[in-house]
Image (cartoon, rainbow, N blue to C red; front, side):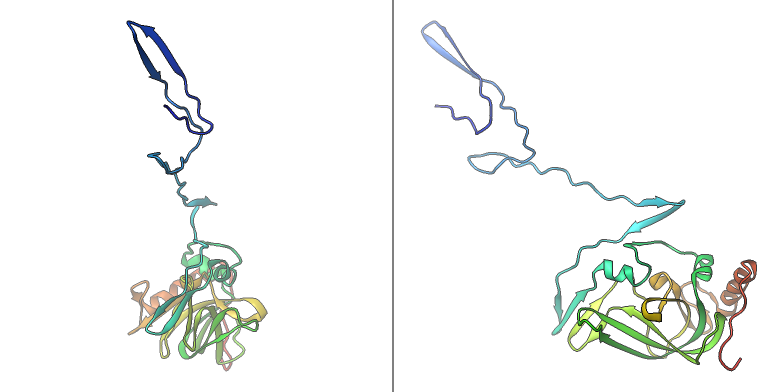
Length: 240
């Protein structure tokens, strides 16, 4: 006996002759992309479409994955990745992070400051749903903007509170005692955040900008030239 799968069309042709019968089975067409496994059936997976970089205004931008990872435990500490949508909101309100050059960083920043990191403190937000980190910067030089104090606070998403760690791939990384050049803009509730996520933070070691591998004074001169060309007034620090 020949059994046909549900929904399939089976054509049987019986030909008589010479006292014997000949049974011919025609192919069974199907419109299903996936067949159920059972009785030797074959499973086909529909092809997965791969995301491609988008081009906007002549600039290639990368779409950041929005899937939240499952918390993991490392040495007794719970590690959780900050959902990308939240991190993106805190650096520009979009799920797309665009690469920025020095000219874009200079023009986008409300402040361009040179100084050292004095303190780093992480805490939960008011709703108790997300961790953010506040970084205290001791300001030594103001290239752009009018700093009201010799210390400013920079906020970024993620951090560690107790045994809970939340991280974001877009957030800048700081350490106490580090010398930096930072490009800052106003965020929510007048907090300051780094322009373009990690892109607006430059570490200085032995008078050299690490990310650019150039002398610090040369880097600051480049910033000054961009500001003059754009008609941007020099910054003013308290006490200057």
